[in-house]
Image (tube, rainbow, N blue to C red; front, side):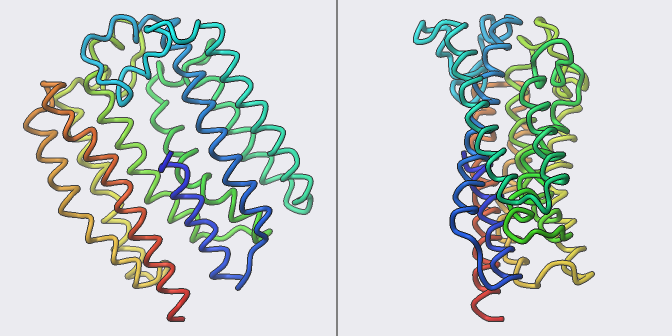
Length: 293
């Protein structure tokens, strides 16, 4: 859930920093909306992974981090119940989204575009007939929805304007979210390949995927340094570089143990922690920036 809460929190901070105030109701509604959307994609995606068979044959899964939660496999929910629950979550999110758009009628069209992209991504991430994850573009849609759109949406609602900074900040945290997906695809690779789920790790293979993982993990720091130097981000955001040693450690672990799912698990957990620490450091940076300036 941190991959949702952190970008929304950063969007709220950016809005407050630029306006000096925010609407608490709208801030709360956007957070609830984002959480419901996140939960819905997890549940609906898990149903379709059951349907394709990948979660049923995944012997390398370390649940709930890879291979799904296993709720269907242990009989806690039937497949139909899980799908119905996912749709209830999605419809609930859409209802809140419509209300938020009603309250933000003057920026209806950009919010509608963001909402349609989110719903499309949720329904078709692994759902037929599009199956984004099976076509090797699922990772991009994860980045888009949990990155720039996750910060831009709340910022739009709160400020009624589009600004480059929330898009930049969303991109930085979204890259770490994408890295979480990539590293979690390593232990799922064998089962996903057999089930026809040809995501990027299946397409590249485990050895080459290490380079993809390393690139995505290092990209936020390269962008952060460049954007601070160009004046697009406040200098205090450089605090986030304190997370770099953790990133390097995760990359080294992935390089050494990419072919051993049980040992690689340290990098799976480490990448989640990396996202959390990087995000918290950015939050601290903006809180300090608000207090100082």
